[in-house]
Image 1 (cartoon, rainbow, N blue to C red):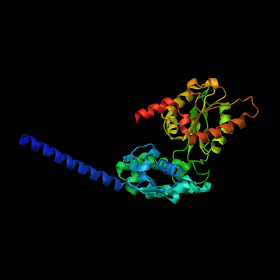
Image 2 (image 1 turned 45 degrees about the vertical axis):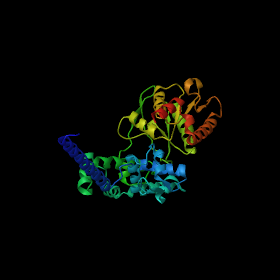
Image 3 (image 1 turned 90 degrees about the vertical axis):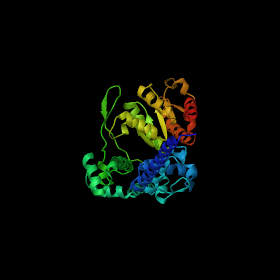
Image 4 (image 1 turned 30 degrees about the vertical axis):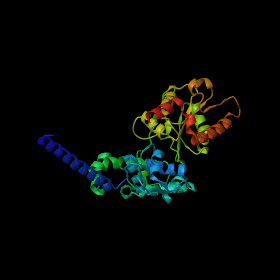
Length: 370
């Protein structure tokens, strides 16, 4: 028999727990309702609708089928719930909640499956401006340069009523979105705020002789990126410009290399980010460059598909030769055209069947972790 005193203590604890849980739930619900801007970037939200377009042909789809498209497992995962809400706020999809039917909007369709190049560019800006807080701040700074964080934060709180504890999130999402949109804009287009935010900077690229390499910002065409891991130097730079870049675009990907990156932070952090974001990677192993091998290891460790390229098969570790490997011979007068065709075919095949470009070891590790 439980003493009366212990019963009373237990009841008080249970009551306190119920009050706490009830209060906490109310706060969570209140917090979700009060957020007036997405807590995911536009690029992250697009990843969801792009998955719907690729796997379900853009048709209305049950929410419970969508988490795997963004690397999640459960429909009630708070990260997935938040992503659905973000996609709705951007106006690129409709339907939220675990039992919802999620459907692409016309804006979302123009982003992931446009029938003309200009439609994607316009739709991206429309999605960004669908969030009134973003549109208002953008209009305010239309012909100005965004000030330093302290002054920007104060302006957001005083003029736009962004809660002080959410200003940091707002700034991160807002600036990342502007950088993303800017990549799709043509040289003279866009407001000053798009051109000025986080301007491209010169980065140091190590080769045999350290030197500074000027960043050339190209206009982005495709949503999916192919991140290229390769050494630097005149020979490889020429290969990248004349063979790799046009071939990657022909395969339907946006080519990106380390010296194309810009923004704040360490270069290796930006490389890691692009390895994670890329739909597929292309690794040039000619010469056994240590940095390339390090980056290739990072890609394989997170099960990213990689197409390997080399002019000498001996430069490819024996354990990786069973993967998709392209060899070329610069002494062949037609080597450029042959390499280009191989890159296009391999990248397209990798997109449709990425498992063949991932070492078996990492597949097993991933399955065991599940």
